[in-house]
Length: 97
Image (cartoon, rainbow, N blue to C red; front, top):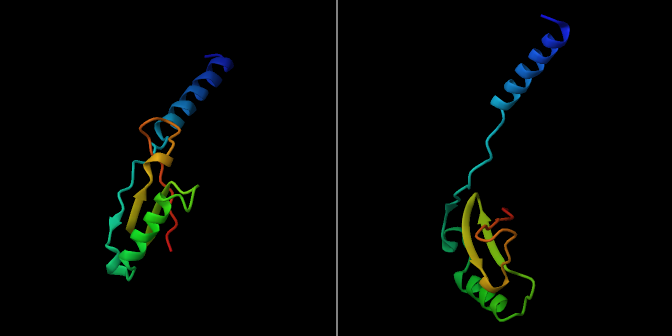
């Protein structure tokens, strides 16, 4: 076997090893859920906040997610403001505190 062929064989083996250990993309995470009352958030204030967002008091808000102690407590989307990069695909971002 020539040196060039040996180098090619080594490169192919390395590429195969790298490809076989590549990670698969993460799947969607389903949050554990809790009610606002479970963590001491008044539901009336959350509903008032949603009403204010929908009445255009806050023009740049398209969604609200509230997570507390690792549980999703509140989730609301203003459908007319959500613009997806890819149709049918929604990306979530949240601030957990």
